[in-house]
Length: 333
Image (tube, rainbow, N blue to C red; front, side):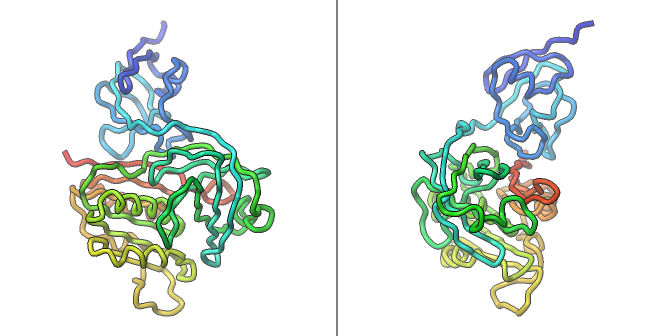
């Protein structure tokens, strides 16, 4: 018996899928290039809203949202998704390496042309001779950005395949392949709700991009920015926090789990321990360790706040951690 054929409409593009087909696979076979990257239900690039029909598997924690790379088709479907900038692949080179903390390095990379990256999105960077890593480009910490260079905040992971080699085997002039952008946890323009932005460690990179862009768009927007580290010696974000702390509508909270000496500007604990009271009108972003992101997600879900996240998953045993950008949203209805 032949599997039943179903009609699928995604942002107006129509294609067919057999019962049991993976939604993303059916689209790609039919020539419909749905946004995607990891194909493992982690990066969030293929998250879309199910407007009509039903699927099996691939459910996100947001009601009505599914991962196209994991969902199996079992009826006619109507789907909607964010239109993202096209994915590009281009050559680049390392132009600068600066130690921001004892375990964090800023890597500046100049591509051959500009990439239309949305604030909070990520790219894949392949330094010649090393495995690919996903990083979220950010803005300068101490001044306004601009230009086409990427700035990466990279944690040096002992025993890692890539990060310990910055300044050693990876120096200024090193060739890089850049692929992207990817990810759905980016700043949506035109919104006015309060932003609650939570960063752990180098998860500050995508969060700082969002802060910078949000204030450029609307300097009066209410923002709560929480940035935390485990070890106070790793707190490289001071220049950025000092910039925005002077803005009346921005509240800044710095946290550290381990404080070798008390600091009056730093609260003890983890970033999610210091969340403000959330409401359904808030838009919340979290980036960093998966456990921290999950804790913020739990609070945002309870408040029915819109939530986007970038959990930094480990790349593999003996390898560096890299940022997989996921998006989970709870929208008040």
